[in-house]
Image (cartoon, rainbow, N blue to C red; front, side, top):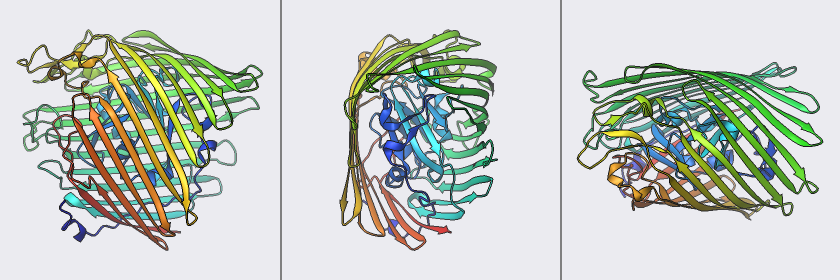
Length: 603
């Protein structure tokens, strides 16, 4: 490891400290469904990443945080979350839905843009990871699961600043402002992240802007959220082929949404309006864009209303989601799609509330693919106050993206005759939660057909064509353990998780597939967060990954925080032992690197 010169770099980081006491896990209300339940009462496999977990993750962006969740496969191209694909339980990057405060951030162009919407860590209260079939709750893009980023509701009147610097010419700066007024509250965050790159043409210049306001708090509160992320990065080997070292890409992702809530004794209604925009500009030769250039602009305008009603028969959740999508592209054409979805579910509580049964269904109309229905069923059995068994089954679909249908270049060809993907998934699990120990374990199976992959008929053919491949059976199990203990009255945490996954998709020749044949077969993660002195905390994170193609790697990360009054000095080291590995495509991940920082909070 070549750290000698790294430690000569000075970094100053600011990041808002946790200004509010973190909720205990048992009291966290899972907000990603219409029937809102405390964490310990839900009957699905849900992982909650708290703001404390994020702080102790030795990560600087959402993509790196999610890599520490077993069963979540983040395949990064480069650093700082510039470009990353999101997979859950062996699904594709088009099969996982990302939400921001419950707003669906799917993009009709391609799932490659999912992580473009990820927010800065400073504004995140928690991340809810929902594994398994979630289409009946969220709609068609939640084929293998969903991730809901829940932002902070408010911050005390404060201003915090961060400056960071480190390996590869990294320099980051940001400011977070919290204002809690008599009848409104506001959070504003701005940051900039730059790097010269760790190999040729992997530099980046990323910006994040975030505003969240709550108006009219004394009467009917109205919440506004607005985000804008811009990424400009060299894309050496990101796409096409390994020899394509001069590629370049710029993306923009923006969201603005308004929501409120109406309550009576038994009825809650939550309406929402939002507009989401994504822009993607790609050039094959960075210094000569005229050789080959793509520009895609996608707009999604949506309106939804979700409600829950409590009666003697249980709790009924229902809702409607309407959206219109517009895409303007020099490659995919100018196209429109209208979508409408009706949701209905009901939770029955039986046997003195020890058994809960929740059947539900979502029915969606697509203007270009007509009607589809996604029924599902969750069942939970409360064994005691801390232990619960659960199971769920469900159908799920995914319609093709515009890239699947229409994209065309020298290496890739869309297919207008594609059929939607379909799957039937099943899962059973057990979870235990107490103040010191949390354990969850689950076994799952997914029978899929008509999955979409870009394949070629032989090794000689250079063009990969979008195709509905044959039936695929995916099965696996996972276990997650988190133990809290005290040393000298300071909290220590040890977390470990393992996910095993097996599918029969490798019955195909791996050289003939472009995307689907790199599943995580073994995924092991662990984290030790310790605090031996009042103002010093340290974290060590270990990740092991082995893919179905045989590639495997081990990565160690670590961080240390030292607080002196309103200052916090930080050092974050990634890939400490200089592992050589590739997560996707032709992009080698960075060697060992370090980032230093100083945080300062103006109270």
